[in-house]
Length: 131
Image (cartoon, rainbow, N blue to C red; front, side, top):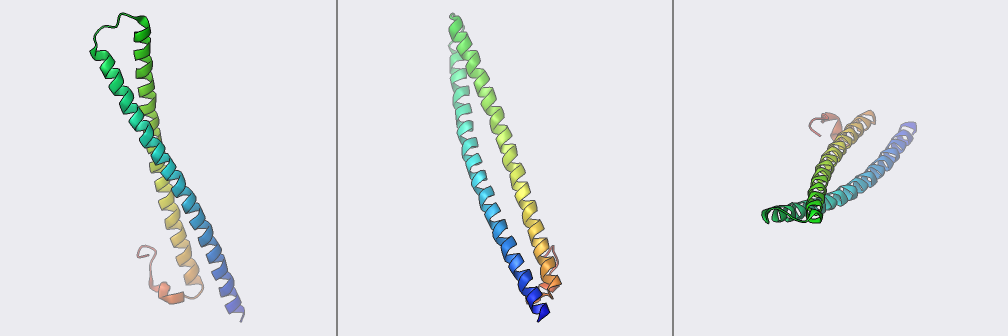
């Protein structure tokens, strides 16, 4: 009976851990989706700014200093947006790797917990790599 209670407690702990993990995954997924949308938007803006900058350069020498400053400003903004896109893409890649690591950890912990509880459902024959 004590073993059964221990098993029930272990299963409850596993269920809580799984629910918490699922909540964290959904939160991470929403964050990734938001960042991907933001990256796409910034990428489109950077391309548009670069096209505008190229178009202004094709017109030849600019006589008006205000136009020159406007062109420099557009170039700076396009460069900043491009750098921001690269930073966001790297952040998305990092988050993706973190999520993968968390999933692998959770799988390993669950396998070990199931083995410790007596190999429920034949899971004792699985290795962590097979799971």
